[in-house]
Length: 76
Image (cartoon, rainbow, N blue to C red; front, top):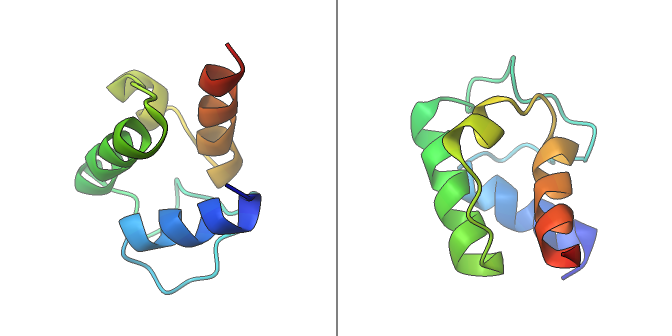
């Protein structure tokens, strides 16, 4: 999966029409709430087999943080 494909799928999971970039800030966005965080956890588990903790997800500030979680687990 390319970075662009990841960003498109993540935008779909977050139910936003915004064009996400790796530098996009999550913490101040209207779509980053507890439900979307749980949806991201489910997305990561289903799509990549990555079982990130709720703490991992809630500590993310930018889209790149989520991308890094995926890369970290895939590279192991």
